[in-house]
Image (cartoon, rainbow, N blue to C red; front, side, top):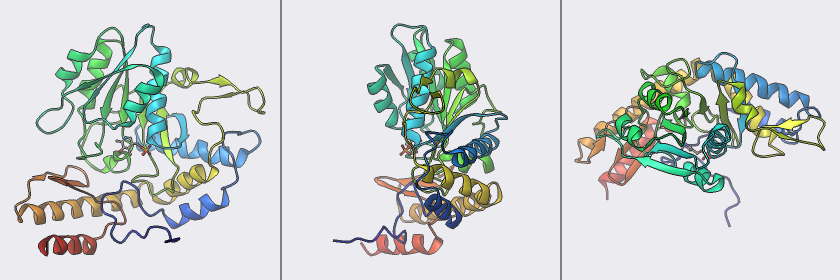
Length: 327
Ligand SMILES: *Cc1c(COP(=O)(O)O)cnc(C)c1O
């Protein structure tokens, strides 16, 4: 039995990556702290507040509400939950593009809301007209994806915001993977670009934080209020998170990664990842593969999908292409 952790030398399809060394160190130090009980563990609670502030800067939101979640699945579920709780429909639904992450299926199942998936356009982005056709007065939430898991596509967020407003629903942007590369690319995706209500942005994906570190952000306090339950046996009196006891490692790791890398380190990751993606797309195209143009650092070609994460070097890609040539 292999008792060693995965080395990253041949990992080309993961959305996670090698944590930043300072993030790894911080995660180890705060391993036993529980941010779910902030009055007893004030130091890690303070790190979480700072991490959320920085996530707000990254996503164009001053005074962000939110917390460091266990991952994108929890953050997406919480967005659906808040919208459901704020909706006055007896039978609320969520409308998302069919390119949305499978975590929305789980959220819809757990929360007993109807998930309606709209077809995407020829470039695999959400089609606002198709989303509008599925939305109605029972729609609690419209979802847009900023960096899809399969092809790195960025949905037209301002147009989806108009759809959400037309049916009086909230708008959620899932930037779980894309949130740390989009600040350096030319797309309208964040709180400043459109009336976005909630967002998922995961430090444990492109953010180089150790797992578990997702991000849930909200523009408005009422969203967090819609998630709060009373916590009689803790010193603090209420909790908006889905999990109770949470990993201090996730929070401290996220804080350390953000402190070390925002913005310049993330810009370098983006520049290198995007250049690698374009190089690989060209290499595959010249070998006759049907390549999907990488608008962000993900290359899709038929069955094949390569995510140009920070640990992925040009040498790794060259080896990969040489392996393909020898098949
Ligand atoms: C990875 C991902 C998720 C789910 O996040 P987990 O951290 O795996 O729970 C949600 N949405 C998108 C777009 C993702 O890439």
